[in-house]
Length: 209
Image 1 (cartoon, rainbow, N blue to C red):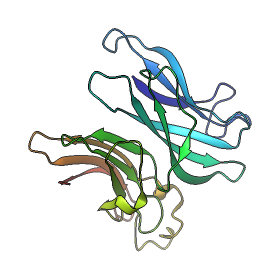
Image 2 (image 1 turned 60 degrees about the horizontal axis):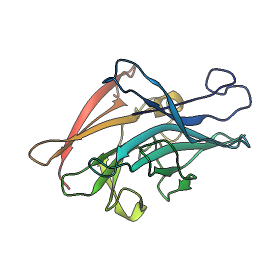
Image 3 (image 1 turned 90 degrees about the vertical axis):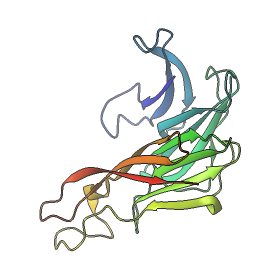
């Protein structure tokens, strides 16, 4: 299974007055071919964008899947808290989106060896960086369980770059995470350096929970 997002009408960041929908692709031949399988979330009123889904199986050999969605509201385009959707039939049908109390985007989610779930996500407002949250069941998430992986990532000390509102330099995060055999978690993500002409680069953080 692979989570994707987009629009049926129009292309580009804003589309043609249609909000983005999150969908699921499925491959039955090991990833050689893919086809549309289901819609995870879509707002027909064109108010809420559901984007960049992260998906995770909730049990070995079972049918339960959880999806974490980045959200925006229109017409302001403001980023809102992440939403959760769930499937009990292997991704064929999904619950209605339920907003969490966690702000950030986009997310990566993985099931830990001890049975808990870990979500890692970019944090694109001061103090910026990458954050994470732990859930006992993968369904219920609370900002009280949030932790900081790293702060920063936006250029500092530039006369033409505002740290409070850095424009395109706010584009940080997009984590990818795995738990290693020794139990530690490794997260890869991108941020900007403080060079006179800032460049984007990839970092890795390694930690235990």
